[in-house]
Amino acid sequence: MTRIAVIGGGQMGEALIAGTIKGGLAPENIIVCENNAERAFELTKRYDILAAEIDEAVESADYVFIAVRPKDVKAVLQGLSEVAPNLDNELVVVSIAAGIPTAFYENQLSAGAPVVRVMPNTPMLVGEGVCAVSAGRYARPEHMEEVCRLLGEVGTVLEVPEADMDTVTALSGSGPAYFFLMVEAMVEAGVSMGLTRQVATQLTVGTISGSAKMLQDSGKSATQLREAVTSPGGTTAAGLRAFEDGGFRSTVYNVLEAAAKKSEQLRPKM
Image 1 (spheres, one colour):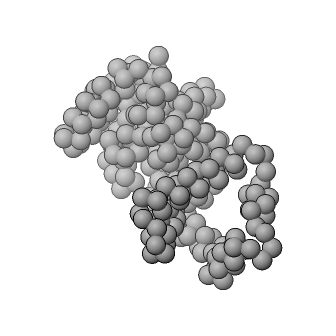
Image 2 (cartoon, helix red, strand yellow):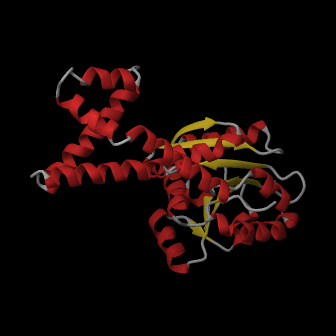
Image 3 (cartoon, helix red, strand yellow):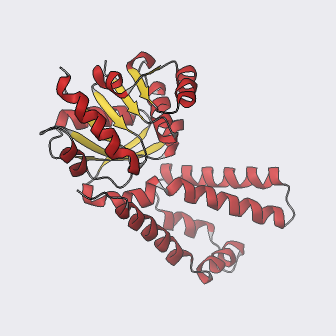
């Protein structure tokens, strides 16, 4: 059974832990390394996993998931580079930190260290994540297969060229926040127009989740489904025209472009 160490117990680290357990990975095969003792205790109790310092966490791990903030990656890699030479097992380092290329990890670790870069998103916490995966220079097919298998238990996995990762980060990594903002806006509009908050929330969430299900299962494109709802001169057409008058499409493009540029800026100097 594969053993994993998760360095960083924040939201994404917890999403990974919860998702892999739901997917069948035994809790005893998961170790979390988290500097905040209170947070580490919370995770061990919630998921019945172990917590340890970085040297102990990676001692028997097959795959080490780095789930810290980009600014903290270098410190983690320094700790790993001190421990790795004394290990009997081969460590496969899996990064889920935004903006950090595999080459940065490879330069910090011992020669030939296999690295896999992943951009997940938080719906993996409920088994509906989308993870884009890129192989580093020394990652072998069997490494990619196992990482994809682990992540496949928490949602959809796509292999993409690493050059596309900044765009992936902007689209799917940050995407849940755009969705939640849209929900907030629709609920607030409904309340402003006289609905109770409970009714406005139920209508919004149900409409969006049902629409996503239609898009996923119907085999039709978003354009086809939108056109099917839009009667000439009707209410939907009026609403869509207001979207277009507000520059909706250009706003979405600008949002993704801004997020992608930020991902690129997070990239450390090699």
